[in-house]
View (cartoon, rainbow, N blue to C red):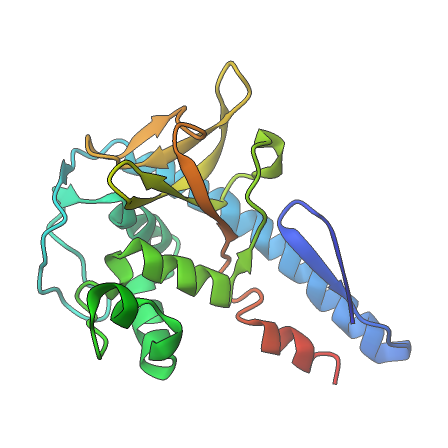
Length: 224
């Protein structure tokens, strides 16, 4: 199996196979790339739509429904922008993160950072380090770069704010006059479309399209 980094979403996998199986895999990959581009476009639209909502920044703990649970509509933090945008396109990160943590709890930082010994479906998905782990496990972890051209619409980026506060936002298809991609995030004043891409240290860069590259094992299985 080979991989080349010549696709705007990251790695595209090629398999040293012959005949019908190779044709089938190629067709699956092409269909996956087309689906990814559609989903990313929808995600950006959903993220920008979030900027039309008035949201008070509140990181308090709330007991919420499951699945499909959400904190009260008028409050939220940076992760809630991401959660609500994905939910608008049919992906429930609350359920997805919870189910993955049930099976792979030790792969998540909950014990190391918060001293937890079990999952909590009320808040696990609302924590940036957990989302970073989920996106790296079920999406693609992409290089962190100071070149704005290395980031594509629909990418997810994490930062470390002053006070060691983790932060997350969604890259859009709009650009500032300086050429930086605008991001949708909530850094305290509600969901905003802003040019603050390189205002803080970038700690992570991900692409997540539900159903595409759910994990590395699934790609490897195709070559068997």
